Amino acid sequence: MRIDALILAAGSGTRFGSALPKQFLPLAGVAILQRSVAAFAAHPRIRRVVVVGDAAAIRQHCPDVVGLPVVAGGATRQASARAGLEALAEDAPDAVLIHDAARPLVPTHVIDSVCKALAEGAEAVIPALPVTDTLKAVRAGVVERTVPREGLHRVQTPQGFRYDAILAAHRTVRASDCTDDAGLAEAAGFTVRLVAGAEENLKVTTREDLARAEALLLGRFLPRVGTGFDVHRFSPGRPLMLCGVAVPHPLGLAGHSDADVGIHALCDAIYGALGEGDIGTAFPPSDARWRDADSAMFLRHAADRVAARGGKILHADVTLICERPKIAPHAAAMRNRLAELMGIEAASVSVKATTTEGLGFTGRGEGIAAQAVATVLLP
Ligand code: CTP
Ligand code: MG
Image (tube, rainbow, N blue to C red; front, side, top):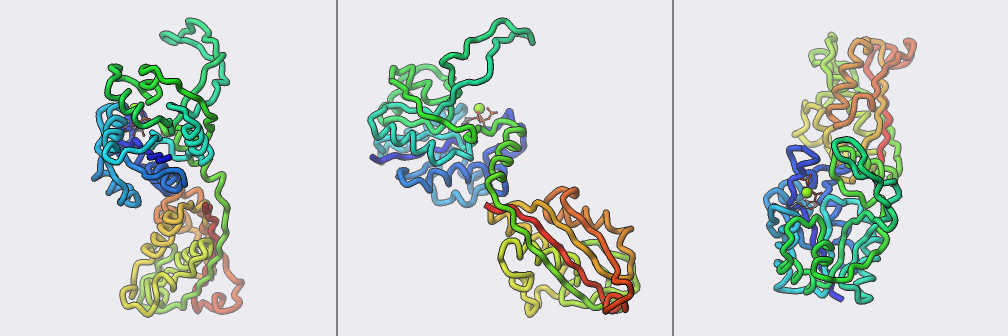
């Protein structure tokens, strides 16, 4: 059976209320639309995936979707679904799954169940969950009556249909305010079958939903811990950069880049958690481009690598080891700067310092050492 998937991504996300429509926002580092598309593109029963939405916006915010056919949407969800269905006509499938881009966590077993019901001959199939809360009809903040929840279900996507049947329903049914495609199928008189939906298949409608989706997703990730260590020798005539902050001191640190020993240790901790070598792998010291480079770019790169792997930096802890300068007066600024560079909360970053009681090279004031630990969640 040839089954195509339509991913509806032409909405403006009014209830979410962000400048960028919600389907383009990152969910644990990967755009919501990208996650929805990937669920279907990776499914063995899906022949092709077509996205309904603004092609230029998709190219800009979801570059990984490039290569898939994109069809312009309409003013309502129903109009967008219709546009997508019409676009499939040239190489018509036997059946089509219509999915909200705003449901990025759709589990494989839900897609399986819908496809299976279609293969068994159902003309319309929807994933649904029984309502478990008590329902009240309310007017002006006051309960009018209790609505019996017996038999009531919350409906999700993907909804599956015989292609010819749902296209005909979209073309003929007059209703113009259906918020799902099964509504049209019902109006056209089809039998709509239910399969089990899933709680995690939530629709991102508000910011609260996005936080819930992220918590669900990160709950499946594994924490990885990386450590980093670095040393630089004091050198006169250079500014002293530590953890992204210029610290007033008669001596700076020698090094190929700006020699920010704190950032270098932190980068190595992040690369270590990723298992991607160290700072020298990404930025070879033999390369003249990094001479006197602002180490901020190294840390941004490490954080970008975490995002590219679909992960998240949970926490970072840096210890600077030196007798002078005193770090405490600068620790808050360093913490804020590192957090800013990694794109995480300052509360998730720690910067502290210790001396070595006058012992060793740090004790003799020959240089500064730094060690760091980074905790990263990875899928
Ligand atoms: N959708 C669409 N075309 C529209 C309206 C909605 O393709 N004209 C898509 C949305 O992008 C979303 C899905 O249909 O993936 C479900 O719609 P909804 O959650 O209501 O998203 P929005 O319409 O974007 O949000 P809002 O209703 O808050 O404006
Ligand atoms: Mg809407």
